[in-house]
Image (tube, rainbow, N blue to C red; front, side, top):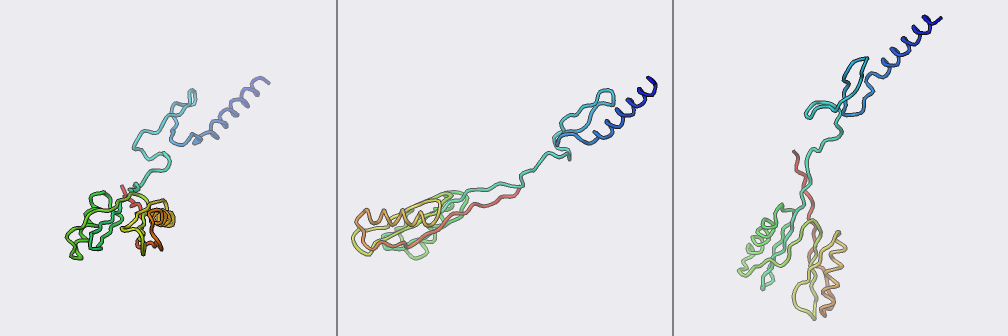
Length: 166
């Protein structure tokens, strides 16, 4: 009877270890043998299940608005560097023939708007925010707070992030 019991016990242990084969946590592999089984982390660079891997990154971009006293303007959006955005806006402003272009507003990873008044205040008022609607509201309210009447948005845009694949 003891002999039969030990055979059944041995078969049960063998069956259980066979069922457990391949049941290691993600990123682990089996080590040892039947006398001392275990698991260890999969080495870096191996093809084990290490979870999701990044395929790239999102880069926040810049926008800029250049203006001149003559009323000429130039804009840029989606530039990776602030200096690139400013240069592109200046080039566009100067392409109209204006000689006194200057950077009036820059923004990164957001939306911008410019508002002017039909009468009252002089100049252009800028606003920025997480959406075009917010940027327009900020620019319009600033125009009105400076005494502008019939303030209207003359420009709005958003910088969009760019995806850079690895």
